[in-house]
Image (cartoon, rainbow, N blue to C red; front, side):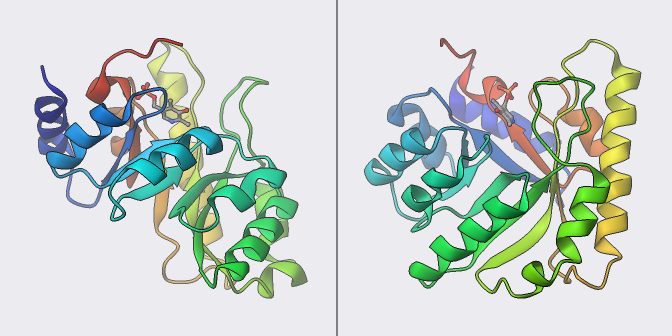
Length: 221
Ligand SMILES: *Cc1c(COP(=O)(O)O)cnc(C)c1O
């Protein structure tokens, strides 16, 4: 099936409250344009350099989401245009995003990445660390970031019940953080679910799915 057909199929299965991030990492600009022409406007990349290059070549009404691990010293390259950063996993990074956003007179959306997977390789913070950040004096002063929710990645496993447990855990943490006075009414996003597990993620409360290979085909690294 074509990219357009894949997109239409996925969109037809998504509930209205779920936002689709088309994950275009490693894929050429021509593929992104095809998805753009089919109406898709939100694209996710996991490398800043690659996202910057694609941003330069593509229509400016695209919303670019950084879904990968972010190194603090590279925030400056995307601060002028990035719409939402999913992988915020420490306070220093949040401070740097705020600083760079301020230089551009922008407010950048951020999600706190929570570690739900039972794997050492996945980044993210614990619920306690997230609460600490939210309740810190520093956080209260950040005027150029908007904390919109949480992001998580389940363990890479065939075991559906484990994935379900992990997604449910993220939903619970989201509820806890959302109930704190430090989060505002825009704290609404639960970014979880990829090609292999997005239906389950939506069942567990996801409001934003990040889908790559089901739209663009398998990636060649
Ligand atoms: C690559 C990637 C995805 C998309 O994965 P698919 O299995 O191709 O849908 C989603 N989230 C993150 C963080 C990724 O790096």
